[in-house]
Length: 135
Length: 158
View 1 (tube, one colour):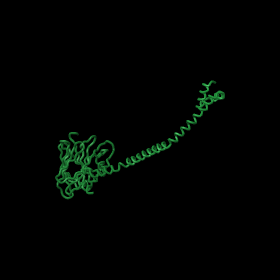
View 2 (cartoon, each protein chain N blue to C red):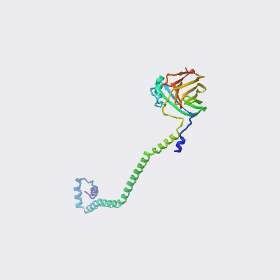
View 3 (cartoon, one colour):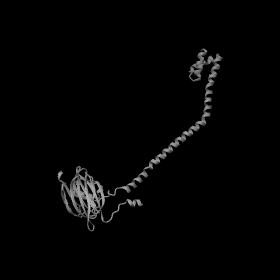
View 4 (tube, one colour):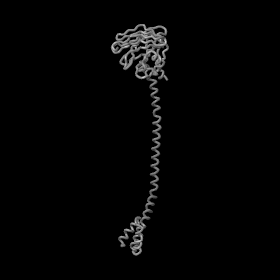
């Protein structure tokens, strides 16, 4: 039992759990990945793609000021850094790169449990849509 | 019929190969030839004697045959039992392996990986700043019940 407890991750209140799901959206087929949960309907109502498949999903627990690297499909990468914030707000600095090219640099303010989508980078016959949430 | 021909017929009769129509001629010769009659009697007695001898030898060998039969049957049963044990082991061998695999997956599954579905509690997001060196970026806001979208349009690919 002690071994099991030691294996369970724990984090303090001043850390932010960042969850990044990489979704491949395309018009190849008509399948919606069940792993997308309640976000499936949102994606279908916002975009015109017929197929949504989650390629990867990663979660990191980061302290304020600590940068976390997330590998993305297609040799892309995302760096997320929690910034100082108040209350139940979470501020994140997000940078997405495609090799040496910096595709996006943004600062977001979310409530804990909130979510934002970053999409558009081409991938195979469709695009990537990143589902970024923070708790 | 001379004695030489009679001897051939006597041997054929002992072997059961003498045609019925030849038996009368042989009988006539034996009736008039004591030597051939004696030979015929001796040869005819050989068959029953051989059968009797074979029976005696079989009775002598019976205990050994019984032992051999018992040994063969025991070997067959032992082989079947070993096969049954192997089948039982093969049928349940996956259980400890599956338990070990499940325990390993629970203990060592990467903490950064999560396959539980997304259940966001809010889509309230403030975009404080946004910029790009290699793409055009658009902000899409379709209402409070839908997530905000930052859409990257890669200049080099459009």
